[in-house]
Image (cartoon, rainbow, N blue to C red):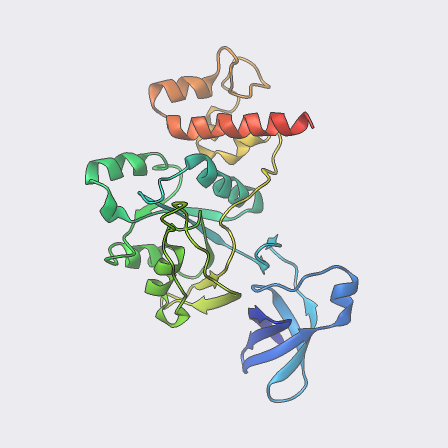
Length: 288
């Protein structure tokens, strides 16, 4: 019987099928082959009794993450706060790079919009405008939450972003039955305290599936090469082949169409600064 793993906890997996949810364990062959069963996996199960089952096989995955262990993500909602904590765009863009690499659609969500004047909020939105869909919401008042939820209808979606930006609060507003713990921002470190304990999928009223995960607060290693990095900044695509040099990396080369676009304001200077920071990190990594 075909099903979807909707929760994983304590070595057990809860598989939703057309006939209900079964508690299941994976066959020993998965461990022998080094395969980690993950929430979001489409699987085939063998029914043992009214409640229990064995997972026999996994269908091919669209993508997969080890931490947290989830699979087949269609969309990342990349969340950052307008303030408290102040956004670090270099870190935020690493989530977007990972999404591009994994074939995952990205949506930008600026939470705590009530903490910034409208003019400052608009400047923040302009950084990603025209590159990714951008939503400004308030987890405190609920403003903009319905519009955000509508954008991932029919998709398997995961929230990603730094700690303390309100991912759990937003999830609670979209899916009250998730009843996730929230703990806000530590005054000492100005960072959020992680609260989610396990991985689970909830269905939204718009027909989407939302991963409730304890992860996606950072990606410590930037898995990209110098020549490939530009491919993960979609706004640079239209300038490909327009630079003086075919192998231009858009750093210091003369006749660079991308640098010209940044100077003219066609590409955000904030995004370009992030690109340079990530390029420097890749080059430093290669030295060791």
